[in-house]
Image (cartoon, rainbow, N blue to C red):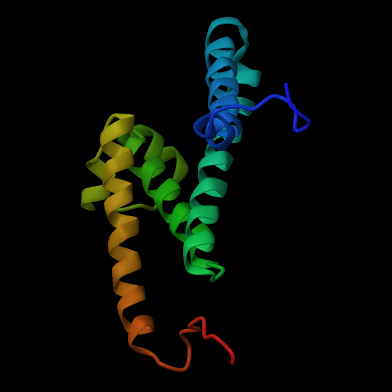
Length: 148
């Protein structure tokens, strides 16, 4: 051992925090699935949803240097769409009694994963419709500039 202390391989120095976090989250998920009640499962599910949102926002902000306030809005559109695609017509009738039965959305009842994918496509479409005009604006698009 030298004056610097123990030397670890470079890959271990770089990936150790990531490995610890992922293993910790996997242990939490497995323990919750095996041992916890419904309330704790709900809390852990919301925690994982928030982890996904934070990691995605950090990846976007870290790579672009810009803060994205629309990120939360598109996640909300996806979550709202997932709920409406996964509710049964009876549940939709209880939630929105004035919703016309002739709407395609009224009869749509999908399992969770297809509902999630359909809602993701809707959020992507809304993002494309709103994003294309904003990309063309020169004044409203803050680009990182180097000052020199």
